[in-house]
Length: 208
Image 1 (spheres, rainbow, N blue to C red):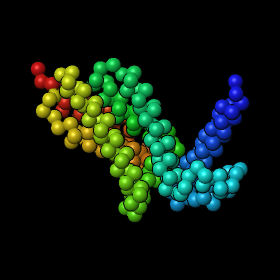
Image 2 (image 1 turned 135 degrees about the vertical axis):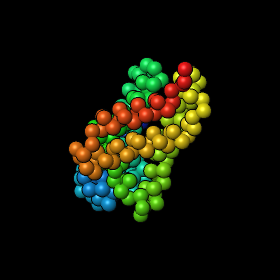
Image 3 (image 1 turned 90 degrees about the horizontal axis):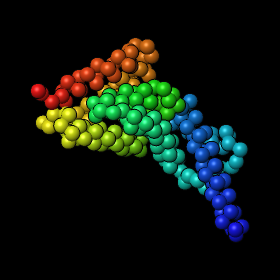
Image 4 (image 1 turned 60 degrees about the vertical axis):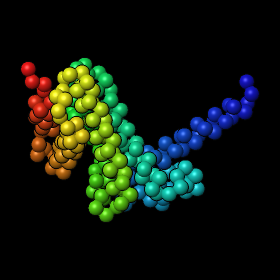
């Protein structure tokens, strides 16, 4: 085998490793101190390489912020996707979407804190607001797809406004999560999820 491909593979591996190291430290900074704590100087102080290496991978702070949010969302979504795939009936999939998205935010502490830091900055940070809007839109789209699948199967009522109900589902998740974070112990997230799911299924249930 030619040594050139092997050398290129090694370069790619180092590049991926460096990017992952930068992202890991960026996540910790945001989780511990909020978005304002994420600076090139703070990253350089925590990493074993120079600012030039950091800026080679990320042109500016906005790129790092995007990568941090994406990684937090993906961490939560991976656990959620496994639970939804494992669920059998469409009703169980709806229950899994809400329960495991809420659980993902609460159980994946660092990822959850990162997202809460984004929400806290929405009134004064247009970039964070745009990223957050994209996240909510993504969750609504996934919810709409699930609801329409239930309608096609004849399990959910055909006259339900799936766009409105999807917005309700996202609001339910965010509402339970934020109450759990901002006042720990004030509510029982599992009980809140169970009541929310029961209400949704009652609205969706086909008569007869």
